[in-house]
Image 1 (cartoon, rainbow, N blue to C red):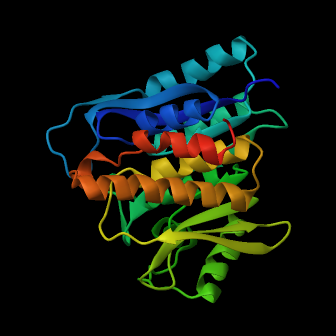
Image 2 (cartoon, rainbow, N blue to C red):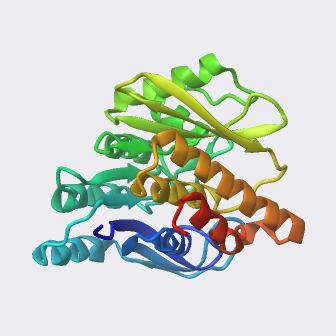
Length: 282
């Protein structure tokens, strides 16, 4: 079998596990060749850490893609995460058009909000732009806050009901995407996970694991990367979602037991053998 290839479009934070420093090792461990288009380079991530350096690479992104196109490179998936400006959203949209083929899985993680609030650099204009980018995706991976912003709904605190989650999923398909994995889903204090929806089958399915108190930076990137690893290793949407939920939970648990500063990300590295096993790669 020919090795699968992904184009990952994220920023690089030199310290603090998120974005490309999460996506690249997870996808590589899953046997997937991972090419990167960095959107920016930072000394650290921006979540609760002050004084970081920032180098904007907006002007280089399309140059990367044009060079790849000139080499006739083919990609099984294009995977995007945090984007630093409205201009980058339009550029990524152009990159989709340039690099995708009929079999390319486009996955958009609309990283722009959490806990009911937009990230500081995001505006209503950027929310609108991200919604349009999601329309070009085969699968999107929003959390509940991001879903509410894109749908123009008021954010609700959990616990949630199945009717509420289903309404969010079905309304998100109006953006134009085919499949959705909605994270941060919980119906009681014991379990936390995700819900997935297929527009064609109109089926809602759930994946849960034990709930761990606290907020851990970078878990969205860990989850989305593991989800894509499952999909590109030919697991179904719900199977891939459960693999991602279990992998993220295990990484959080490892971090919680070590009492690591939660700003620094989760210990996913020591859980990679579990991911490889769950993907039946050994």
